[in-house]
Image 1 (spheres, rainbow, N blue to C red):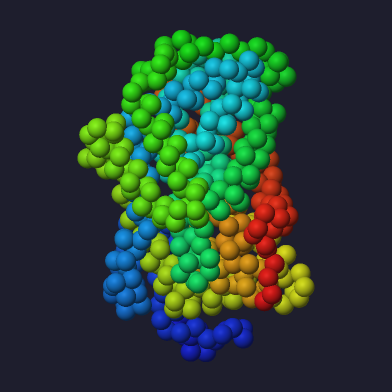
Image 2: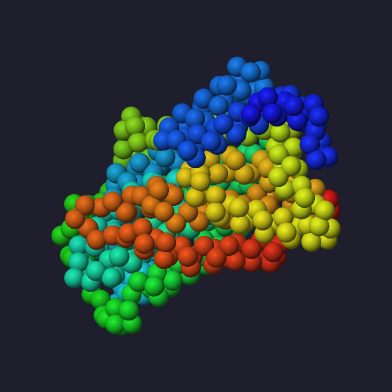
Length: 468
């Protein structure tokens, strides 16, 4: 592969601009990393770190560039957020809040929508979809135990929890590591990056709409009219008998502390344009308070043990790879070679390009299971070509990242889907159920992202079309 791309760099193919030797080497290493992500069981982080080190050995990526990514502000932002999330989990506040919400349901539709609302809210307090899936598991287990005589409703809830967690992640800058990777690749390419506030402005409406549609779709496909009409009566006592986390009575002192702290941190993130304090600094300060002796609820050592260091290293390595793709010119060359023909379509190029990247981003989960890896692969290419066809690189990157939130086809497509597919002594979904859901949800997801990309986001400040 390296020999082939080196020959391309010398001769050029199909009129494409010549690829430099540096670019050929970078693209070769990147292609091999993608191959390992798709076709092997080797850990994604191991592959990404190995590829980044290989780029350093081959002289394409400066050593300092690799080390600097470990100190990137997104890594520190996630680190602080994970410490805060450890306090939330330790206090049991999230489980208690979710239990309080669902006990107000009087029928299946209300239960599903209230559960969905609680799951959407967790995107602002817990980084990563797998962390949110694990946090919500006690609530699902308790509900499934209480509703064990209504198997169709339990199946619907089993599908609802991971599906909404994945779809609603786009509502928060911290909802998935892919969001931070997208923002940093934009910044490395000299385009405006995202803040907590403007990501929420664009992502939260899509998260809410797609979650509501997903709930209605699951109800339509997996419950009968009789199931939906039957009355429900779920009390706090019913749920408490199936979980060890206290969900009755007054809030514990720890839960009061956590609720205040999380509220203040989120408000501070949203007010960044006013006070100018970087979100990473706010997250680290919140983490320190959460783990302090007097005001905290969890020790710093215990909180740090819960941090998924593999994810942070993966992010750092993929940021280094993305930077190498941009600076070596290989991303621009790959974009021109793979999607360059779109430029020849004239006035329709911008529309065709946008539709193409949304479709590719939606189906990419079938070959690259990691959401962050998909962004590392797609965003440099999208950002390089978008301006040439008259599309905003920022809008195109956001649309691609939002579309990549659909990963429901297989249980192996995302960690939340795998987590809820393998519950012992608990009815859950089969591969056939997932295929049935995704057959409807995939086209709906594509249409929704395109509607927001072409109409909604331009109206609220993120235009799609620019002068090429």
